[in-house]
Image (tube, rainbow, N blue to C red):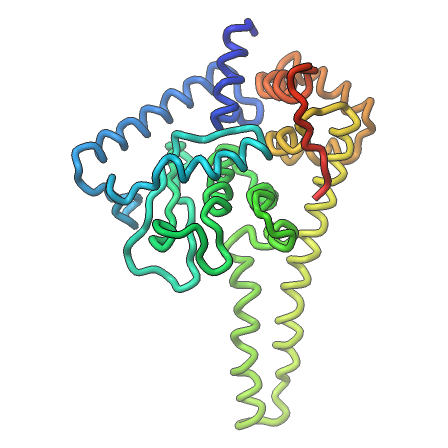
Amino acid sequence: MNSGVLAKLIELDSCGFLISGDESAEDFLLRVDKTRQVYADFENMLADGSSVRLFDLFEVSAAQRILPELSAEAAQITQNLYGFTVTHVPGFYLTRQIGWLWGGCLIGDPDENFSVFLLRDAFRKRSRFLNYRREELLAHELCHSVRQAADEPLLEEYFAYQTSPSPLRRYLGNCFISDRDAWGFLLPVMLLPAAELLRALWNPAFPSWIFWIAAAVYPAYLLIRNFRSRRLVNRARRTIIAVGAKRTEAVLFRCTLAELTGFAAMSGEEAAAFIREKCTSSPRWQVIYERFFRPNPGNSEDDNHEN
């Protein structure tokens, strides 16, 4: 790969356009061009002052847009942690009736590589709502927007929740990685009162203990899965540190699940050999190496740590 193309890939990486898997440089640049065109078309629709309907779910307008200086709060978090600053994903305040506890979310179409993040309207005038902070929510959702092309849900919430200042959310955030996890956690708990009521009013022999077991089993499964995922990342982190990464968290963020699993079982020497081999054929790893491994005397940043 010539230096001009590599410099372009590095610039795009720092803007939150990550090469996925074994994607070629040509395919990646084509995908970025298509993505930018989708966003340009969206901006043109907003520019005429009318509302734009998103995914047949919400309507947004330029008046609801989150100001760039507020998005910069989140950009500082993602830049410090993972080495990217996203400016192309727009954000909006949602003014329609929403849930009491809802703070914000990202909605998108992975096929179009298009997404927007939505925040509760309460964040328009204040930076905190309940236990949510505006910059934390924005940074969290921007991580999702960057990794959506990877389509690897097992660690998706893990990386997004590392933007949180709360140690508890950083630890437990990856427990819930799908709607099924939320229902598996809530449904047995919701059925418990009904089971106890049946036992008390209808049949004293009714085995309500089954529901107590069900209410304990799925949370235990979520905690065990979360523990194993965190152990995998922590082992991979130690290997990446041993190889000499300058921005360990940024490297981990850009690895595939298969690569993290491999690094977790490798020695430093084995990992170094693996990275050298990948750099001969993988544009993604050439970018990772140039940005986060190659010594840079002018850069004293080092984010090596264990969460």
